[in-house]
Amino acid sequence: MHALELRDNALQWETERQNRLLQSAAEQKKKQMRLETVQRERAPAGTEGTASVQLNEWVDKVNAVPDIRSALIPLDDVDAWSKPFSLAKADMEPWLSFFKGYRQSRLFMSQAAHEADNPDAATIDYPVRALLELKNADARIITEPPVQINGQVEYFDTDGTLNAGYDASQFRALLRAAVLTHDRQLKLAEDKGRAMGDALYEALMGEGHSNLIGAWEKVFRRKPSIDELHQMLTSGRIRVSPERKAAAVAARKPAPEIPAPSPVLRSTPERKAAIPPMEPPKPRQPAPVMQADEDDEDAAVVTFTSTKKKSELPRKLLWSVAHAAVGFVAVAAYIYFF
Image (tube, rainbow, N blue to C red; front, side):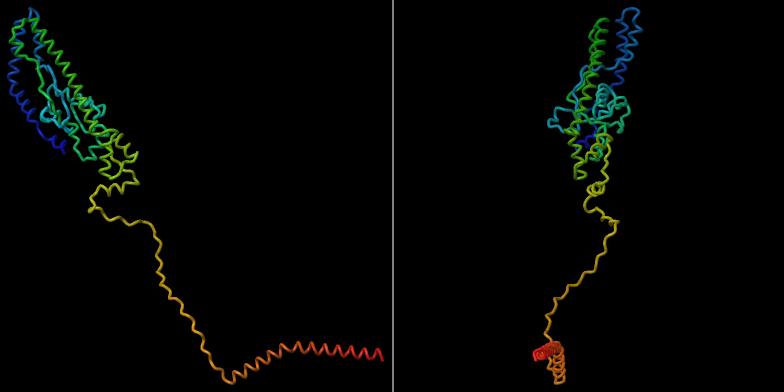
């Protein structure tokens, strides 16, 4: 990753500049002595002490600051900018002011502006923390930002002023102007540092936190729920919803390493033994006709005869009664008429 590589790269440009400053420490001390000498020679009588106090704290004054940008953001035209260097490791102006403004940007919590001397990952704003965790990135790429500038810092020409032969009033006026310019340029450096941090925040988050949501989708292979997104924006934590936790854990692991699913702890109905297929019923064979012997035929005749007699008995009785009645009527009629 381009941003991660820049984190550990020492900038040759800034390193050489810092080395030059260390080597010129002795010359700076000599310069201080020359300033004091010239001021005493040119100061009116009775003002030597005041001038000495003022010059004892004199350092090179910033006359102009370059533009600054985050080296974490890809750039097409790299030739217009210096090599990346760590802004947090620069211990002089205007870098301290650049860094102070950077700590006031949206990348950090509000208290970060008051803790510039002790940068800590705990001061990083919540959405940025969540993005770093999703990308498994080191927080130092935010707390120790790699930066680039598009030109040299310009300083007040102290040597030229000393050798110009100005009188006392002119010399003091130049010193006052240098101090005022220095203060304005440091304020400008602070504004540029804050703007650089805000631009990096927008680049990291994307429109509507689209990059943050995209990083979540890349890890969990789904969009975050409203509650999950709320957790990232308000606490910087990656919390998976309980109902999706098991699926999310499985999704983050490579496929060959996914463990076998645990058995479901619930009772399952016992399987009934499979019913063997029933054979289709065989067609019923007609009972064999058996030839009855003579005894069976006689028994059948007797049975038929007894049955027939039982059915004819009531009929014969009825005819007998009818004949008797006719006979009785005939006898009665005979007697009546004769």
